Length: 220
Ligand code: DC
Image 1 (cartoon, helix red, strand yellow):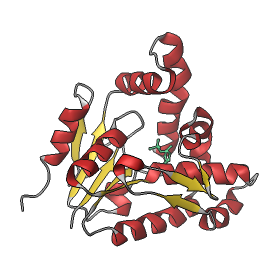
Image 2: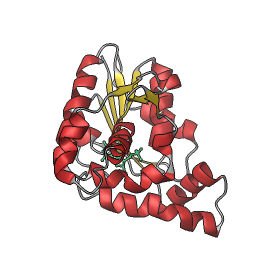
Image 3: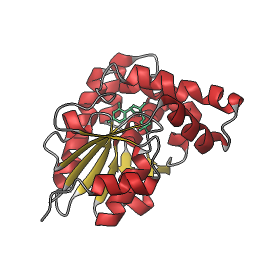
């Protein structure tokens, strides 16, 4: 049984690294951010973005299916494939309005902890903002992946817009810097707590960061 918990801000590279680690070790992979993104889309579709009190019940009843296969992550909402939609700038712009509502977090934390418990064998890589602290504080490996703000902005701009000139960086800054500021009000992912290994990926290739995470695995 192996549980690998990975936290980090947007643009830190944590999703790519977490997927690669899961594939390499043939483990399940859970992207908890995808659940918050799907929840935001669901709340928006139900016209409740301005009604925090209505959100927990909506999210509890959300018809979400999420595959845990690292090479084939698919997210279905009410039977519709929303894998790409939840990554859009539109959803990035609204997701914190839902993910910072504490009773919504209680609903998703319970769902995520149940998924971790159900996949302890052969194991699971879980990534997000509160995995090392709330979802799986007893994980075998606990990592916080960071990168400088400049590097994170550049990565997100290249990812979303295919370029990283001044206009692209400006367009992406809300999605990275403002969102991290908002998200940091409800989860602790900017500094590594005791027992969590900090990996700064600013100057690293994906492969180097993957190797750094794998090196933390307890020897059998
Ligand atoms: O990792 P991401 O950018 O796809 O996450 C989307 C949003 O979900 C992010 O703005 C913060 C929130 N989130 C959270 O609050 N807790 C998590 N465990 C994962 C994501």
